Image 1 (cartoon, rainbow, N blue to C red):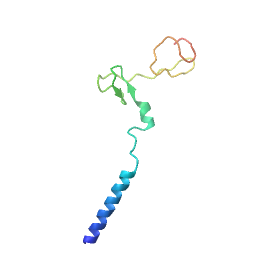
Image 2: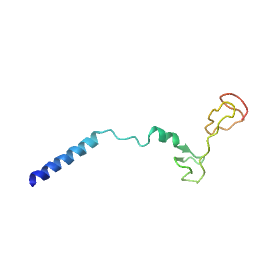
Image 3: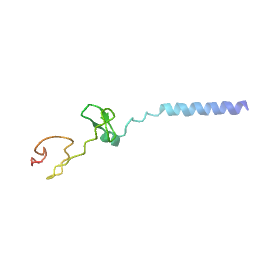
Image 4: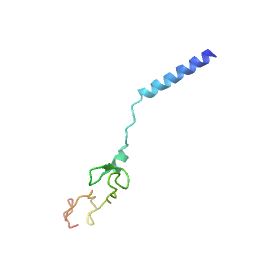
Length: 85
């Protein structure tokens, strides 16, 4: 019975060493990073609302002429095609 316990202990130690040898997973996948947004209060969030002030995540806006994604940019003209927004 002592041999079985020793074997199990060795297997657990090997599994733990193998797990530690693997590179750590990135905290956020590339697709998750795109989902993050910065609120006007300065807080970074990945949800629909800011966890600090409760503001709603801004909707993505597109130029009606060329379809350029404005990414929250404010202005009277599209930075891509120059047409009025």
